[in-house]
Every structure is written in structure tokens, then in C-alpha cells.
Length: 414
Image (cartoon, rainbow, N blue to C red; front, side, top):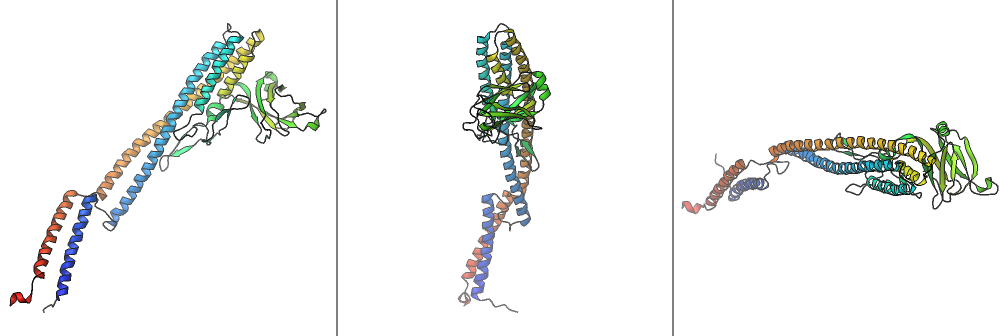
């Protein structure tokens, strides 16, 4: 049986064959240019799916490595700041011991107080250290808030919180990125029970009044009061005669009145439960202050108390005895603070080791992923070039055949 084929069909079939070979050669050239075997999902659907998964794993790994780099920077800065504070604690211990020398007089203790205040300011500067992005390292969750700042009474107060921030460094792994300044520098065990002073959150006076002091004057009475908290509340002027600003002191646990409607004199010491505190400024009616008995003694607070003792202690036996007791308590407080620094530095060092281990593990994992990715996506050059040579040869042959067929005519047989 004969098959009839029109001239147009002959041309069309020959052209389509050449175009198929041309497309195959072009595809091979694109693969060689991109050094990729799989250019589109249609080339190898299974491999394309796996390649997408591996690229997503690499993207996640890059993000974790960036987090690790940020974490490493924060921890290095924290470790440097803690080392600086630790060195300053040693300096403070030397100054406290010098102040306890019986040969020093009141004037010389004043100079030592100035040196010690300089050490306190340097400590506060380190406690206010920031990371590369400008966030405070020791403010807890309040990274944009300066943790240690001087109040109206000239003493440093903590304005951060007790939180600890964590950074995700793996699918199921997170590492602490900071340590709360409260836990580090405020929540330090004191040599003896003492007091923590704070203003009420709803105080409305402008400028705000402040409370200071917190000295234990009668150990027995204070021991009977501990561990209670007292609240000093300013009452309406109409409650006393003649009308004047006054305050009442209550025990927070049961509301028991410790002192009632005491006329207020700015800066005058107020004694109760073996304690002595003083309020400065012009408080508004309803303002309150908390006096909390506690076993903790903040690092800066303890040194500020000793500076106050240096200024107050006279050269008489009573003054020297009080100064000796203050010196012993301060040295004990500094030892406790130093132990806190060493413990935290050890924890920071452990986190740095964990960061380094995670970076090394990620590098090994990335190498495995890239090798697998190369096996799936990269091109075998030798094979591709051989294939391109073959396709080019077939294309040239098809073109030559088409050229000869196109010139055929019935006139060639006449």
C-alpha cells in the first residue's frame, strides 16, 4: 500500500523533527550555562521537590547562624562587662579596707568616699552596657530602658525587670541571651537583714518626693519586725491640728499602725521598728513609700550605704565602732556579690561554649546538605557535553537531509 504525502506535510514533519532536536540542544546548553541538571520541576519532579526542601533547610540554617552570631556578640559583651564589675569589686574591697584603718581621720575618709563613689559610678556604667544594636544587656525584657539611673536622692535605682530573654538557635533549641540586672546586682544576699526602699507606683507629687536611709539603729527591734514590710502613707492635712502635711506608718501584712499622723518635716529622720529613714521633697496627699525588710543587699546600694557611713562617722569611739561594723558588713556583701559575678560568668561561659558547638554542628550539617543538593541539582559536565555534541550532530544531519529533500522535484526525473 502506498502512502501519499503532500509537499506541506513533508516540510512540516521535517521542520518539527529539526525543532525537537534544536530544543533538546538548547536545553542542554542552558544546563551547561547554569551548571544545573534540574532547571524546572518538569525536568525531574522528585528531585525538584527534594531540592526545594534542601534550599529551605539552608535558609533556616542561615537564619539560625545569624541568631547565633547575634547571641555570641551579646554574651561576649556581657562577659566583658561582668569581668569589669568583678575587677571594680576588688578595687572597692581595697578602699573599704583602707577606710577601716584606725590611722585614717574624718578628712581622709572623705577622700576615700570620693574614690569609692567613682568606683560605684564606673560599676553603674558597666551595668548599663549595651549590645551592638543598642539594647541594654542587663535590663531584663526592658531592652530600651536604662537599667541603672540615679534617683532624686543621688542613689542608683534599678528600672529594668526580672525577665531573661532567649534566642532560638535551632528547631528545638534556645539559649538565654542576657541576665537580669535585678538577679545579678540587686538580689544579692546581704551580711545582715536590711531594708529595701521604694516609692509607690501611684505617687502624684511633681517633682516626686524620695525616700532614703534605711539604717538599722536598733537590731533587736528590727529583728522583731523582720521580715515584715511597712508602708508610709501621707494623709490629709485636716487630720492633725494645726493642719499640716502628715503621715501614718502601717505594717503591710496586717495593717497595724506603727506611727500615726506624724507631722512631716522634709529630710528629718523617721524612726520606727529599729529603722531610720528620711523623705525628701514635697509629697502629695496619698503618696506612699514601702520599707521592706529583706536579706538582700544590692551591690551599688551596699557601697552607697558605706559611702554615707564614711561621711557621717566621726573620730570618736562610737563613730569608729559604727564604721567598723559597716566595714565588716560591706566586705561580706562584696564577697557575696563577687560570688554572684563568678557564678554568672560561669553560666555565660557555658552559653558561649554552647553557641560555638551549635555553629560547628550547623557547619557540618550545611556541608552534608550542600553535598546532597549537588548530587541532585548539579550537572555532569562530561556527560552534558557529550550529549550536546550528539544533539548538534543529529541537528546538522537533519538540516542537511531537509535541504536535499527540499530541492527534489519531478523535473529531476524527466
